[in-house]
Image (cartoon, rainbow over all chains, first blue to last red; front, side, top):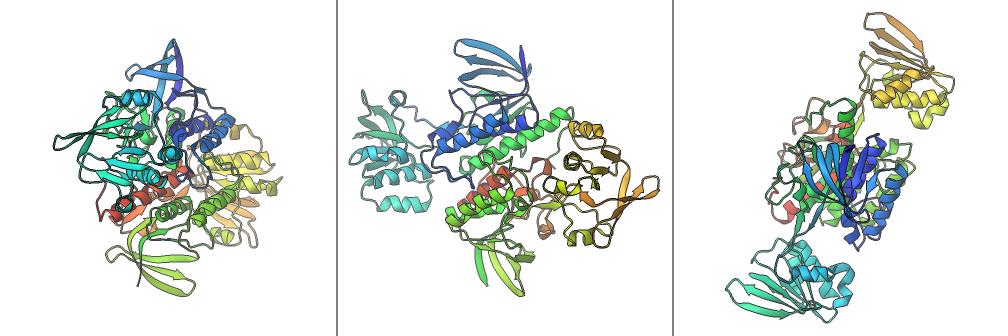
Length: 316
Length: 316
């Protein structure tokens, strides 16, 4: 069985940073990424990067390239197109899958950096919509919806920000929200209320997404029980993010939202398992710089554990 | 009395990032820096920046310029050449000094980002040495000491790293260390032991730094009580860093090393006082990316408190 001292799972900014630091500190490591390229959520950012001060990048892909330059110059180890089906934290082994190949791997320490993804509605038609590639960015794709009706589902900042962008591009926007109260900041709420082409539907849930070859309408269910059908050309689901913490289930403690509980050193409740990035950061406080910084912290901590034969650092 | 919602003290990477985020989130703020320019410890980094992945900067000043571009483009508020003599956390006021001017300022929240500095020996002659400008960088100034004797005081990574750099540049290096045990990683220790021009003096303390117009020698005191004089052209004090936490004394809890105790949101034990950067980060885990990330977290948290009229976020 192959042995790796430190296995990092997830190749977004947190995992890339952890790998760079492992390499610099002489830690035998392997970064595993399920997609065919590194970058994680960076690949979905179509506007200017604002949360990595000092870097001027027009979009996530530009910052991804900058990070990869460092990553490859450092000589980090990476395995792409590979996913993990299970982790056994007693035997310190995990099962890797690359295409049809399956491999069992032994590790000393595991750094989970699997990030977070969009929370889904889990209603009929949603899976089909995503499978057809109808997963739009309000900033990059707004021009596609000029003079068309679109639905944005959610009541937070991201829902309102998207609605305003789409309305400004000339779309006829419906904000669909389950509750009467909004998490979005009042500045967004006021701006949306003032726009003629934004309609806010409260106490309304999406019960289905309709359409054969493309989205054509959504079915809505009011709190009162009333069902309505709304014709739209696209649905933007903005009901928050969900940490990708499935692999840690039953191993490390997480809160009710699935966020892994960590301390300032990225330690989880399992002594061999560390977590960094959006997997353990409250979405409101998520930032690229924080993820990168957490990657450095965990690698430095592991270097001190590995080189000093297990000595543990006291946080205070 | 002038009122500022959020006052940030200290203009290194953490403070710069906090100010950029305050400005972006519409928080009325002021960054106060005692020196005539921003950058903090960046201004002392003379070699390539390695701990801000994605950025290629030849030295700290280059990264400082990149951060300042963002800072000024964002339109942040800053007051340079200004120091703070006292903080009153009951009345939420602080006393500013700019040249001979003295001003009392009222704040809602205070972000301390005063960083850390080199720990001093506190022996006769040290203050005079520093006042003469004899505060060298082992990487930037090594060439000055070819064929000369120099002393490095300390037993950690930074002491050994400096000793190796100086030895490689042809200096005759004496490592002076109080203890018999070293905190430096074994790889540095082995490398130093193999170099003919590095001599390690253990159980030895520096009791004085001698020289009129420049350092000419140091006085050493062995554990046995024996006093010796060693002729050297320079002394590099590398006995660790000390958080600049004086302003928070009596206000916020700190550990025995003076590090402010904070949680994942940068909160200290005082509800109006936040801390970010090296002021609250164990030196081993300090990194520019972490400081920048912490600046973003604190500003986002304060934005949510200020806009929601005081609602507090539960870490978990």
